[in-house]
Structures are given as structure tokens and as C-alpha cells.
Amino acid sequence: MKFAVRLISSIFAAAALVGCGSRSEDRFSKVAIPDENRVDVEFRRLDRELTGLNYASSASEFAKLKDAYAAEDSSDMNFLDIYTEAVLNIGNVDQMETRNIIQKFATGKPYCEFFQDADSVFPDMSAEKHELDNAFSILKTNLPDMNVPKQYVAIVSGFYSNVLCTKSRLGFSLEYYLGANYANYKYVDGLYDYMICNYRREKLVSDGVFCWLSTEYEFKESAPTLLQKIIYLGKIVYLTSVALPNQDMHTILGYTPDQYEWCCQNEAQMWHYMAEYKHLFSTDRLTVGKYCDPAPSTSFFPQDSPGRSGLFVGYKIIEAYLNANTNVTLQDLMQNNDASEILEMSGYNPK
Image (cartoon, rainbow, N blue to C red; front, side, top):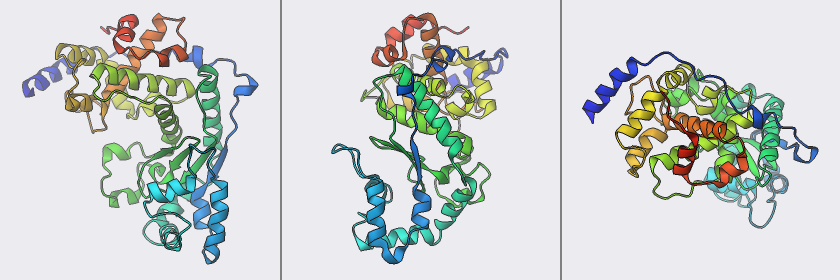
């Protein structure tokens, strides 16, 4: 395998300098949105609500908060309970001990600084709300059976997860979006440069849309082939790009501009490497993970490649499939789980 990587590096280095061309999602993103599909969702700032809470009357204050984050129905959970029990892992807010821990978390060191800096970077989130509302309006028009969030919520999660999706709410951990040059990231264990480059405000909306789509259209294969995985991820990337027509593709994919350009230049070489080494139908978790999991680069490819390069290839297959089959709707796309059929009907074979 070491020889193969060295060999492929020389092939990649010789790739012609060609761009990716224009995006083809316009026929879906520019669809007329009927009034009934227009989304107008409340954006709550739980981060501010916790730092501004009157902790002297915490029992009654938290009771009011629980009412504000009540579950939509019996199949859902109260968002505040999810936040304290699943995210912070400190128990239910009905307990005094839990409320005391939250007070220390929100107002004491070290995490209070993240609350303060989040408030500084995000003094207002009306731009994010507008972009999210428009994104989900586009998706609802193209995918009428898809649920949309009933509420957006800003939180600080203590680096639990950048995005939190429940049945009815879409939560954002603002500490993940303070800017790639944010000084305090270097003090947090487990954060690396290849991850931090995406910790910027511009990434918040696409992360949220991508996460929501991933939960609405859950990947259910327990031992997928690489082809199945990249086709699935390609669908989610494509839908995200439809929802966010003004967003740069490198931002949606989580690449740097140079990494995205590298993929554009080396698309054919990546695809033929996957095929030649019979990776496409491999179910080996390590092989699939090397193409699809976050990493500084894709280990089969040169260091200039991005991690998760499989997202790019999957996206390009879906783009080719929809361009070649203009009668296929996005609803049809998401109902078709036959990855081999999608590949065959796409005619995808970059040169």
C-alpha cells in the first residue's frame, strides 16, 4: 500500500489544471416558493438566557425556561432537559444540584469566557436566521415530506458537538464558530488545526443544514460499501448546496479553498484510484473511513488533499446523475437508495 500511495502521488502531481465548472443546482434552488412553504422560525439564545438568569430564584427561573423549550409532542423531549442531561451530562434542572452546576458553567471559569466571546462574535444572529429560513423554505418546496425545524437555539455546549438536532429544534454550539484565529482554541484538548480552520461564523449555517438533512434522511446501512457511503454523503452535500445557493462549495464541504481546488484538479485521478484499487465496493470500515471521516488529508492521496474527499466525489456523482436525468426530482433522489443504479445512470466517469 505504501508503494501505491507513492505511485498515485506522482499521478496526482501531473494532473491538468482544470476547474470544477459552474454548479448545476439552480433548477432546484431557484424554484418558486409558495407561501405555505415559507419558513419563519424563532431563533432563541439559550446561551444568553443562562448567563442572564437570576440564580437566586433558580427554581422558578428554570421552570420558565423549561416552558419555553417544551417538547412539540410525546415523541420529542424538552430541549432544556436534552441540553443538561445529554449534552452537559449533569442531570435534570429540576434538581438543585444541577442548577448549581449550570450556574458555575455559565458564569464561572473557564467556560464563562466562551459564553462572553460567543456573545461578542454573535451580538445578533438575524443574518443566520434569514439564511436558515430561506434554506429550509427551498428544501420544503423541493422535499414536501421533509420536516423543518420549529426553533433554532444558540448554546454553549462545552465542546460536546457543533450542531445538535432534535425532532423539532436545531441547536448551534457557538464556541465552535468563534473564528479560526480564536486564541482559546489552543487550550482545548482534542482540537487540531485541520478542524479549527472550519470554526468560523460562515460555517454555522451550512453545518446546521447538513446536520438536519442527515437526521431527516438517516443513513441506515450498518456495513456500507464505500460507494454507498459516498453516494449518501453526496446527496446530503447536494441538498445543502441547493438550500444555500450563495454559499461557496468549499465551505459546504468543509475544505479550504486550496483543498477544494485540489479536488477540482484531481477529480479523475481520485475516481480512477478508487476504482483501480477496488475500494468502491469495499465494506472495510478502515478503508471507508479514510475517504469519509474527518482527517487532515485523505491518507490514500497526497497531503494537499482534504480529509473526507469522498464527500466531493459523492457530490459530483449526484450532480452528474441529476444532470443526466432531468426528470428526477430531489424527492425521487432521496427515495432511491440503490447506489449502483445511481452511479450507472449518472454516466459519471471524469477524464
